[in-house]
Length: 234
Ligand SMILES: N[C@@H](CCC(=O)N[C@@H](CS)C(=O)NCC(=O)O)C(=O)O
Image (tube, rainbow, N blue to C red; front, side):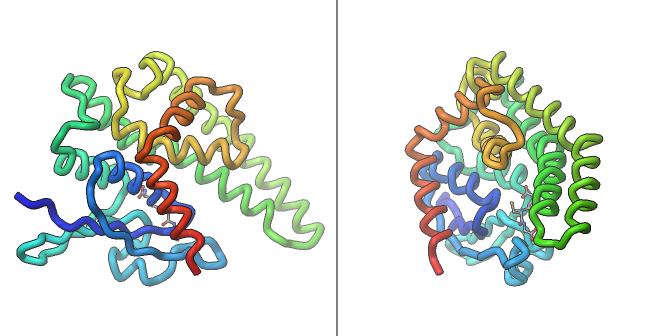
């Protein structure tokens, strides 16, 4: 049966990148509809016409014969759907049932446990950079540093220490010494942690090596090229 038409609703500087990366790795054809963040770094209202929450990524699947459309939201669910329906050659599949379950676990883990403290740290960074006059800036700095030191910095470290140890136990990948959708999904928050200066690569050699290895893949290069070209469009 013909695969449906896959349409990715893409937003600049977002998790949508990893969906492009996944689709490229599976060598699937897809279309992209692009959206730009506004001056407050929020998604534009048009995205709510596709899904009521208006967050990216969103995937639209269109049946080629009936034209019937289905919209998928949530990165973990999008990955699970694409992997189970469209990885027909088993490129990212692990045939060991325990390993396959572990991959599923990480599809939940990335958004459910790793991303929350990362999001808090990101919001605190944005608050610290906001152009407000003294003494408000001083107070903002004091409050954000307190929240960070009491909760999010330590919790983020707890999460990335865990990921580092898991990769060390799994021969350079998250699961069973083999590239899976879990590595592609988790690459986005891990790269963000380093890009935002929330951890140093030198302290996480296994995560750094995984990210370096992922970035040498042709699929990563093609996704990056598309992502950057869309980001530079006016
Ligand atoms: N848990 C959701 C999170 C989606 C999400 O928050 N996406 C961000 C981009 S990375 C977004 O759309 N932000 C725009 C906004 O908050 O207005 C997922 O994994 O898909």
